[in-house]
Length: 314
Image (tube, rainbow, N blue to C red; front, side, top):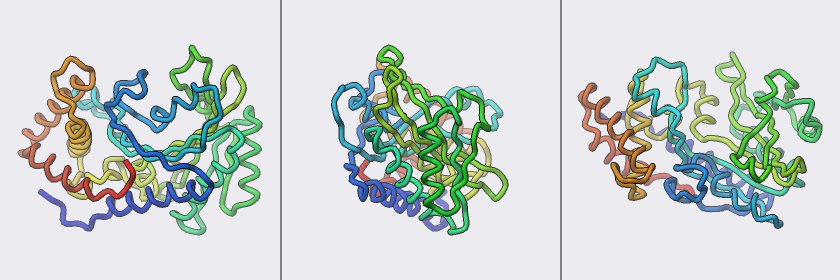
């Protein structure tokens, strides 16, 4: 059952996570530790799906706040219904991933972009480019992109090539009148097309900018840097469970989610939404494993032990 390849994704995850945190720590950012995905630290979501869910109190405090950087276990359940209905889909995204993010005052926009570009350009080939996709309507973001492109080699700028909603970000804080304007960072995937790997968002209250966020997913980063067909191949579960077809990706996804929630003490079938979601993922995992003559509990045990080799402040 165990793939005998080298532990490539685990090594990449530990390396990239360490370098991401160090790039921002060198800029004066404080490294924050993650929280339980099921913690409800952000009451607007049942499962933490981003670093901003953890850092959101800074947006609401109305006071000065420190520059923060963190890596957070995250689950987004958009794929669950796809798996339950066995839908044939072109989506390459799974539910579970490591979210990499920062939050800082608006005045640190330039330093945030510079640190993120340092991180990315240290990972890819010297002659490979990073593209910044920005709207001309956001003059401050466009200026930050142009300034960085002047200082750095191989930074390209794409202006107004996406629909207007692409450059806008929602935080679920409409009542507080907190919204976001973003630009995305992309890399060349398989030397064929540009693929988004993260974004930088200026956060506003009543139209006045006061914070800047950087956000990126570890699995998405690895997937596009190496031209992989699905983000589960950029997840460490790929090191212990070989995945080739769509159902394999679903099994790997369910293993990651079920392990995460079980380790946090979530109980399936409970009255809480987290328990109901766990029950649904467990049901999909049981069905898929039965079809493929796999033992889900053995898979979960192997993955649980393997994940302990992560060396990140999660």
